[in-house]
Amino acid sequence: MAEKRLQPKNVDLRPDRYDRRIVYEKCGRAKYISHLDLMRAMQRAIKRAKLPIWYTQGFNPHIYIMFPLTLSLGFESKVEVMDFALLEDMPFDEVTKALDAQMPEGMKIVSCGLPIHSHTEIIHAEYKIKLAADRSPAECETLFKDFLSKDKIEIEKRTKKKTVNLVDIRPSINVTELKCDDKYLYITVVLPAGGSFNLNANVVIETFLGMYELTADELCIERTKILLADGEDFY
Image 1: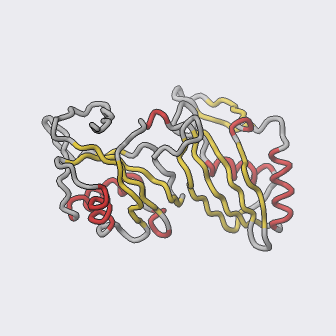
Image 2: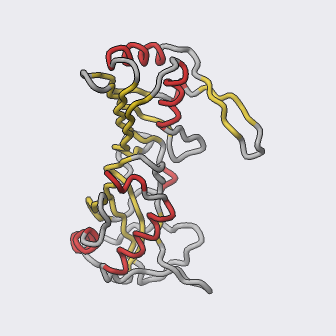
């Protein structure tokens, strides 16, 4: 069966191009790697792994890599995705092994496969949040339930024309799990991502903290899923 190839914008496809999509983890110290530094780290890893990498065509050829959904600085993730292309039809497991051996601390290649879905199909992302604040976890859980009971939760959002509009984010917050122990409040939430409207998990937490005049002592946010409209995993 022939490979299904997605044609990225502004990329001149050639017959000897073999598209690949990797899923990787970005945890621990790696969560502080900026997007620009991440691109550089991936390019270095690809070169050190000696992969038969495909370069863009034109006056300034460069390694083609694409991140369908960038991750906010300071977030961890088990499901980050990067697309690239090879000049040879290299087996997926060989790509995974070669590239994983060159990953910086906190990053791990989970899998390699074909890019079946386009990044334009991404609709939501799931996050797991661990929060410790200046109130007990049980009190924070009660307050978060009250937060979710609001008819409207409005935030200020700056437009491309540099005007500020009030946006109601309450309909976009889908909490699938809420619990606590003696140290932390745990929240699993699905938020809009990848489309015309994106809602950052940190914005949700900051809005919650501000509404109830809480101070975060510890906050960990991890992206756990990238989802299509039907709830299927993107990768």
